Every structure is written in C-alpha cells, then in structure tokens.
Image 1 (cartoon, rainbow, N blue to C red):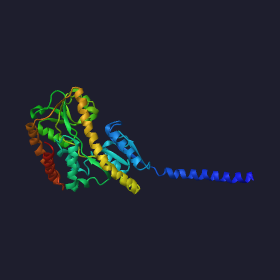
Image 2 (image 1 turned 135 degrees about the horizontal axis):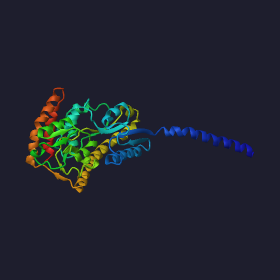
Image 3 (image 1 turned 30 degrees about the horizontal axis):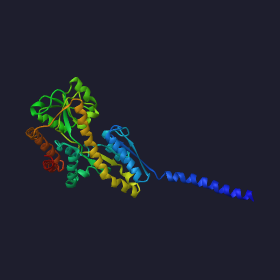
Image 4 (image 1 turned 30 degrees about the vertical axis):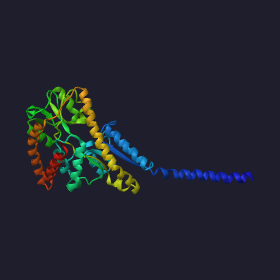
Length: 344
C-alpha cells in the first residue's frame, strides 16, 4: 500500500516542478525592458532625476517596466540623440535638439529667448508658444514626447574684466557655440570664436579667448572658475529644445495600462527637470562665488542698450525664416510680449 501511495505523490511533485519551470519564463516576459540614453554625466542632478523617474515607473507598473538609464551619451551621441530615438537605437532619449534639420523654428526660438533669466520662465513662454503656434509641434512628430522644456541662460564669462557696458565688449574674443548668438555678439562689438566646451578652459588659460557664452551650470561642470573671474548675467540665448522622447514603435507596443502610467508621469517629469536645471544653475553660482567669481547684472538702462542692438538682428533672422514659410516674426513678437509681462 505504501508503494502505491508514494508513486502518485512523486508524480504530482514532479509535475509541479515541470509546470513551475514552464511558468517562470512566462512570468519573466511580463517585465518590459527599455533603454534610456541621455547626455548628462553620471551622478549629475539630471542623471539622478532620470533614475528617479525610472524607479517611479517600475514601482507604478508593479515591476512590469524596467528602464535602464545610460548616462553620458554613451549609447547615442548627444548631437544625434533625437535621430537615435527615431531609429530605435535608444528606446528613450534625453538631450538638446542640436541639428536644425527639420527643426528650424525650434532652433531660432532659443535665440528669441535671449535675456530670459531662468528655465522656469523660458519653459512657461515655450508652453504658450506651443499652444499658439502649431508649427513648433510639427517639428517634433518623429518620436513620442515625454517632455519638452527650455532651460536657463547662456551667460557671458570673462577672464580679465567684467562686461558691464557695451564698451566693455569691444575687442573681446568670446567663445560662442551657436551661429545666431555669434551674430548678436558681433553686433555688440565682440569677436565670436567657435570651439567645443572641452577646449574652453585651456584656451582661456592660454589667452586664446577672453571669455565664453556658457550655461550657468556649465561654470561648475567644466570648472571654468576661477580661470574665468567674471560672469555677466545676460544671455545671448536660452536653449528651448531640451527633450525626453520615446521611439514610436516601442511606445505603440506597450500595453495600454503602462502607456497610461507613463503619460500620467509626464507633468511630474517635466516640472522636476525644469527644477533640476534651475537648481543646477543656482548651485553653480554659489560654487563659482566660492572660487572668487564676481557676478554682474546689467542696469536697466544698459540692458535696454544691448537689446536695442540685438533686436534688429533678431528681426532679420526671423524674416529669413518667414521666407521659408515659418511664422517666425509672429513668434518673436509674441516672445517679446511675454518677456515684458514676466520679467520685471
């Protein structure tokens, strides 16, 4: 009797093992893996936020969505991130839209934002542009939007003297990375020099350039102080094209409930990213002051002088884009109205 009882029990036990082994892969398949590539260094405020969002998505999908964050533009070059997401090299990408191909209005709006003091105001105006001018959104149809924001100012740092007046700019060799900003600098009396950020510090040490137009957070990231001793809090442009985007094919294959979790997170993600960049700017100012950097704010009268020179150049740039069928002049007029309303 015992023998007959043991054999059926053994069969049941063995069957359970086999069924369990067969079920394990099925359970594992429920976890969806996505690769997120972004340009910022590992451990930076922005990188930490991407990790927080990935963790939030994992938790809110009960472990069904795993997002692997790859910082430092290792997976996709920062200049090619948008195209990389379109092609599926990265499932999700975060970077600036560097290329003007297919994004001419997007790129020029960054120049129209010259003089805006922070990313919060820039993003607020950008959101209003997007509501009023569909041409901006049409340039972003190649991928699923998680957020689009503008960030803080590209200020002027100099080695030997502060730039407090137009006369101070005369003859100064200033590194400027964007063509339109170079046009502004030239009109103001400076000499624009093109070079990558990686070469800036050595060039300033050698005296090849007198200063540079750089984002505030980059002052700390690239240890520009104390080589550069002065910073003028006036921007030649504010990038209006920092994005987090997802490949359409990967998005469309996600279950509807996971899509909803991601969509519901977009407002939080956007607000946190704007704050991360503005906090990074504020932190960089504090760090630079400890290195001995002195900060200059233009007087209202001097600020008006600078804009009286930059304004006509902006008008010319807008008119050139109008000729290609874009509402650039109307956008520029709208930006100026919003700046007057928000910046006192």
